[in-house]
Image (cartoon, rainbow, N blue to C red; front, side, top):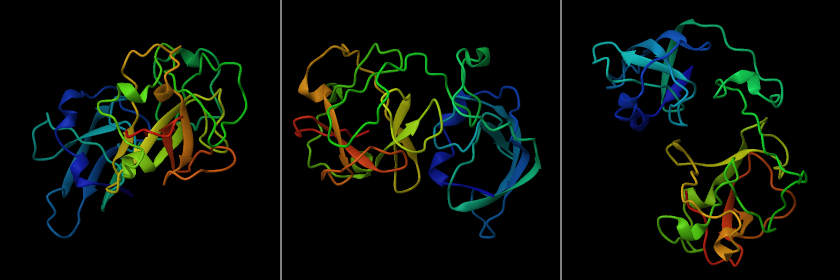
Length: 247
């Protein structure tokens, strides 16, 4: 059974339209808390979208019986159970990283991986404390903490800066983080909402600014040791230790 949090439910889905139905979706879902919760009700599959927020468990989009069809819903982790009726067959699980071309699809299917077209020549593991740079997939932009909306001091210690994790996009998120992996940086709030770093500022990737040279530490800012691993929470600081990343 899937659970879902209340605050992830409304408003942001008015922009999404149902597309082809995705395998793995339920034809309908029923939520019955037994406490007359406002989220109780029957939900009918509307379609699927690959553009849903990251806290949605899958690409399945639903409407709720008794509400306008303009209000669309997804399901993720939360505090209520949902019962699935007439589930559609699950897609075949991905078998490792995809080959070049990725089957000609513009986006990866739910549970699938993206093809890494520019892996680079460095194949070793990232280690704690060493200097690194974070660049976009096309290598056109580099993360510079000075370009964030506001400067975050090193002492700023909240979940969005102290619970950062690396998730692999071009393969399974297990083991060490390697330099030739395509990765995203995520943080999970205390209420279960998942946020992902989005590098938007057009920073020249050749910049030598100290705020664009980063190092990985433990989440509390103390030095970590060994290789950086998937599934572990970290913090990211500027190389000089004066600023930290807050997503």
